[in-house]
Amino acid sequence: MKVLHVGAEIFPLIKTGGLADVMGALPQALLARDAQVRLLLPGMPAIMQGVVRQRLVCEIGPAFGAARVRLQLGEVQGSGVPAYVIDAPYLYRRDGNPYLDADGAEWGDNQQRFALLGWVAAHLAGGEIDTDWAPDLVHAHDWHAAMCCAYLAAHPGPSVASVFTVHNLAYQGLFDANDYHLLGLPARFMAHHALEFHGQLSFMKAGLAYAQRVTTVSPTYAREMATEAFGFGLDGLIRARGTDVSGILNGVDGTVWDPQTDPRIGANYSSRTLRGKADCKARLQGQMGLAADPDAPLLAIVSRLTEQKGLDLLLEALPALVGQGAQIAVLGTGDADLEAAFVQAAERHPGRVAAHIAYDETSAHRMVAGADMILLPSRFEPCGLTQLYGLRYGTVPVVRRVGGLADTVVDASAAALADDTATGFVFGPATAGALAGAVERAIAVYRRGDVWQAVMRRGMAQDFSWDPAARDYIALYRSILGHGGD
Ligand code: ADP
Ligand code: GLC
Image (cartoon, rainbow, N blue to C red; front, side, top):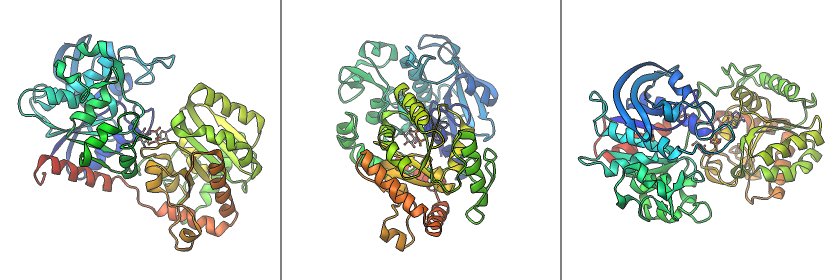
């Protein structure tokens, strides 16, 4: 079966969050199961450079305001996954964040930039752009790629099926309704049951309304996003899709995240030989300017600093956590007020709290390897990957019971500790008190060395590889295509 995956970022070329990790790893896991996967990516500079051995497939001509659009086919450097790239310098040759300008504002022409991505996907699927290859099914990720589902629906002739995966319902790709004419779609698509959303134009709705199936990245988030509390105004449409909506849990790319082989960390280790982890902790304390104290429970946060991640709760709980003897290390970028608050907290608690305001892959690995616990107090979390990285690295997750966090961490209740199932600490209410309570429980277990090590080792033994997700996606593709798949 031939599947085209469409998305706007991909590790290791361009990344703003977990979407890139998924785009980097899932296609490889599908290829390993003999699906013929190709990627379609917008030609941002890092992608133009990192997709190697490119050859011209089609001179598309002018489109969406760009004088010249060409489609090229190459392969992702390192993984070798075949990837089409859209070379449209006018729209894509911009460094930095794929969605925002240097001042952090959305690019004013994002509607054209991401409409083009969806349009090319649909026409590739229609067989008009590459005469040698066309997918049986298109799999679009997040609002950036969602328009392909509408273009496929509008396309005359036999329609190619699509799957739309929601990685985050909070980012919807909303634009001025007056820009609708730029899309080249029939007027009927700008309706309430289609792309119109409270008087605006919603790219996310193109995926939710027109894809044959909608998935998200954990079973719990699949249920949550159909509720008013988590639906960002789209829960009605999601509920209306009924059983077309499902959740498939993300995995971990073991070639990138493995404490036994990770070249970014100071010392490698495994669940059998944990000594290297103590080295990683000592180095992290040194690098972050924390007191060199092997016995202090060290809590890490590696995160986008946004409302979603619930880090205001951590700020509120921070004096209590420091009072319990914890060290806290934060790596993140995002909202200016959260960045400033963590810098201030570090100044207020020298040697106990440290903030590294940066987006830096190497530091992320060092944090995950060196800390004792990784904290995710998210308000909502479609899947969350850092708790999975924490589990793999023996860095015990302390998380809120939402989305993928609820699906991947087993709370160390007395019963779970007794029957050897606990892998972390889970709390319910989105309050500083509940967060502090969970950290307090974690610190109490941390102080009981061998019980703590058992929790660490159990986490490290969990299998969160990508293969089960690949198997589930292939089963989904087969159910849509209505054949056994080959
Ligand atoms: P989200 O996609 O919502 O940001 P995930 O947990 O799925 O959340 O994925 C976050 C990804 O981004 C992980 O790979 C994590 O290591 C990485 N990450 C987050 N913040 C930083 C940072 N400041 N520096 C480097 N990597 C980061
Ligand atoms: C999103 C979500 C995160 C998820 C990631 C990859 O950015 O916020 O929870 O892990 O996508 O699917």
